[in-house]
Length: 119
Image (cartoon, rainbow, N blue to C red; front, top):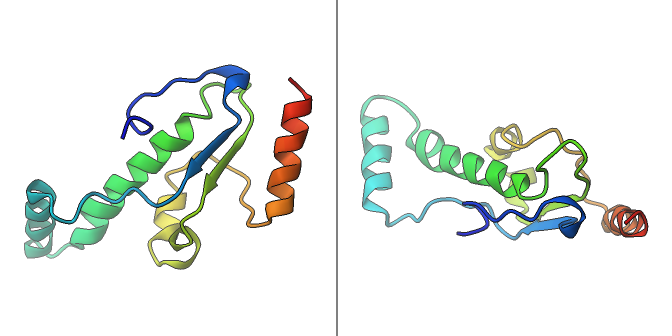
């Protein structure tokens, strides 16, 4: 959880942030469960209002570990395919800074290589 809550590696020291899975809250969290149920009782979508919103904030914080200033460059790699395939993926993507998306491994490796040669 420290990645989401304040690791600060400014400048050229950080060129790659890898997020292996979408940071949804634990399903057994009593507070989250109560909030989800309350939202659903009020006619809302508990998953989107609680779990997806939590994940969106955490994803933005994770991307923020790389992007600390306008001069920072690098790759934020989200390896969880649900970001591209699930219905809530667009909602989560909108929480991120404007990044250039790709699923092409060669392009990512090329970008990292170019970044390492500019240090």
